[in-house]
Length: 200
Image (tube, rainbow, N blue to C red):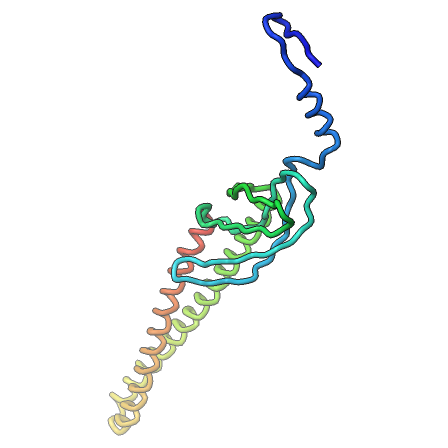
């Protein structure tokens, strides 16, 4: 079939176009998007990264299609992606690329997880602060007892030996309490940094 263009300057062959429309009507889906379920099969951990091998299988109609692999880590590096396919003769892989999408559901789930993590860290801070406060109370009590024993030893020289032993025990206990509180304070500082990062 031939038709004259509107300008009337040249002839255009429309036969190929009609054949294309017929083929398109009876051909399988072309350039569709299909989600492929995959599961981790092998994980290799390195000092600064990890290699994760995921596998999956699915049935596809004939034709060119885009296969989507959802739920990949947000920190994945596109240049590190590798994909191999197996299928009937003629199956071809044209390429692989990374497309980041943040749907409302994903954002809500991620936000909830972050909030839960923050709450967990804050609970840890509260527990540590309570322990530190309890040690402070014990330290004040020990200091009061030490002062009382000092007065007794001063007024009753015969008790100096007992005072020396008790003072030594009190001193060791105070040192242990202070050291434990310092360690907990450092942990609290680390937790504060993590909470700040998560909030950001």
